[in-house]
Image 1 (cartoon, rainbow, N blue to C red):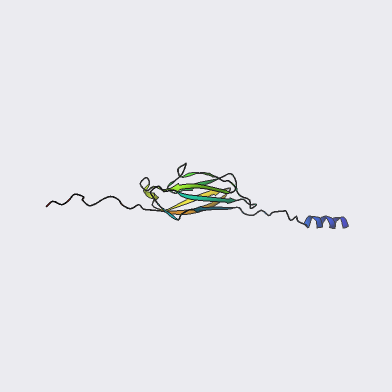
Image 2 (cartoon, rainbow, N blue to C red):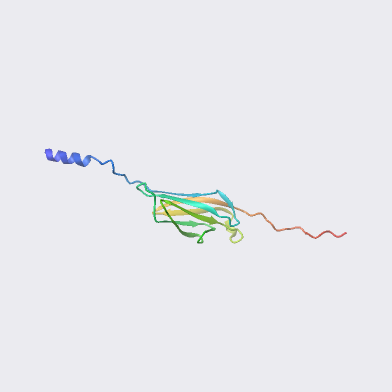
Amino acid sequence: MAVLAIALLSVGCGSSNELEAGPGKLTLTASAASAPSDGSWITLSIEAIDDRGEPGSDTASISTTHGRFRGFKDTGTVVLSRGLGTIELCCESNVDSLCVGPQVIQASWRGLAAYATVAFTELPDTSDTGSSLPSSP
């Protein structure tokens, strides 16, 4: 009986070096809440933390409703280094009229998802509707 009690006590003692696994975390942030729809680039930052609290690795997938990322169109991957990655996004209303307004950007990594929204503003109308000819006397 004494041997059994000692065995149970040693099983119940935990090591202080043990880490409990928890949920990972993925964050997506935009450098600006809005931008002109003239092809100006904004930076998107991704931060990934794994379920042990360590910086994420590998790649994160990224997509947008409209616009394009530097290096590819509307879907691609971002390499994570020490849990961080960045990519640039632009939207041009003269190429895609649906660029004007809020665009949703989604990032995903190891089953986690994060979203950001950037509102691309309408460009001013530069067409001249009036006549530039002088009036005759």
